[in-house]
Length: 83
Image (cartoon, rainbow, N blue to C red; front, top):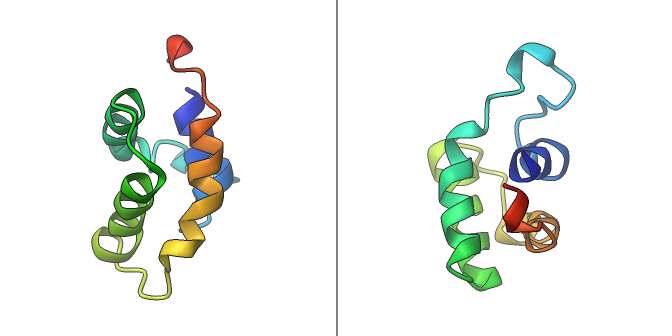
């Protein structure tokens, strides 16, 4: 649930964190983020994935890799034992 929280509260590229009916919108990205975290991916690997999801998959052309840094920092603080 912590990854989901970070994706909704920190990343939230389409602005749905306050939409109760859309809280599962980013769930499809949780598995890949989790895998990268447990495999000790470095920041650039996480940034690349989030950028791909935002820019290429969602089609948000204004996204930049630097936009992903706060999300990566929040993800790195998660205790994976509770996921």
